[in-house]
View 1 (tube, rainbow, N blue to C red):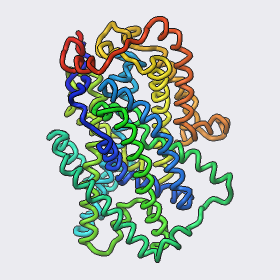
View 2: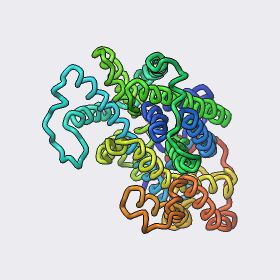
View 3: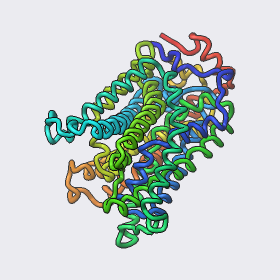
View 4: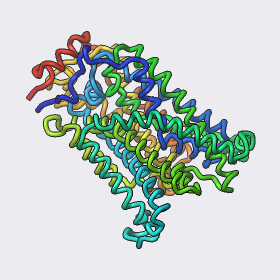
Length: 502
């Protein structure tokens, strides 16, 4: 069986061209998206005032920056992507488990972004063809999907799949458009909110809905976990990008400059606009697509919706197709390439019912963001403990692609990592089941179900500590680390014998 292909091979040093500004631009581009706006506005809808929401987002993104930089080190040093890096801890075959878990989460994000883009098209069509809103219902009411939005969702989905067919290079101009347009659109939306809301004073004076501090803290910690969970996917697969870094400094400084500031700034726009809607319309409008549909001018609505659709398309391909395509390719490198992996992502993203994931702000945070953070936190803990505390940042690159090497463990699976992963997820299961209503809250101890509010943190530290206990003696005694400099990464990329095995 082959354990590499062109997408999984180590990037040679000669092709690592990303510097600080590239990583800063990457994060600014990915942060300026509709889900970021919805992230902040959902906190306002959930009861926070403006500074509480901004503080929560800033703290959450500062926290997630730490594993982002730590996991990015291996990509920058060895030129390897996430599915290959995770083989060191889970084994060459076992790595498929965390890779698929991460990929499924990306499929969910793909579905959410596709729904947002499709709904923007629906809002635009409704201005010019009002009858689209009156189409007879095709799906059962429990399905939660009207016919008109379903049509535009499917149309936008096919547009995404067409871009996958054409290849990632076809999205470059759209990314440039997004990088130029979205900051301008955000500034205009901010200016409109301040003007229509009669100044920042009344907007920022909107009080918190919490009656006391205990109510605030009960909401804050789950919300903080959701903020960390927002980028928990990228905190794992950041090597997919840092493998192109010129140096460690480039990825560290670039990410530090790009992630927390841009998320906080764009979130502030979302907070101000959402707070203003309660003054302007008498009720909070947390979805920017719905908000844009309330404007009186048909041309303005059309312009806004086309812009949202195009920028969403650009974000979707860059953030939610590239990484899961690599993860699915890791399952069968000889059979699955980027295009096929992209198609798999698209199908799962549709079947995950994204319109239900973002139907309300509490579901967006407490069901979607926290739930998947309970899966990804344990993986992050295991990866960081393995790389830093057990192997001292030293990997044998050739063995990451070779059966029978130090990362083969037992038949390609490291059972210690798998047990640590499962045991790190288990504490969060009762809280998840009570949150989605699968079991009654009375049947589970409040202390146990309350762990779910800290799902990413619980899983990260529990799995990391367990893995360290399981593996410490084994790594030191049985699998001494081999120092490999960057030239071996070149070799692994250039020579099939070093990176491919039957």
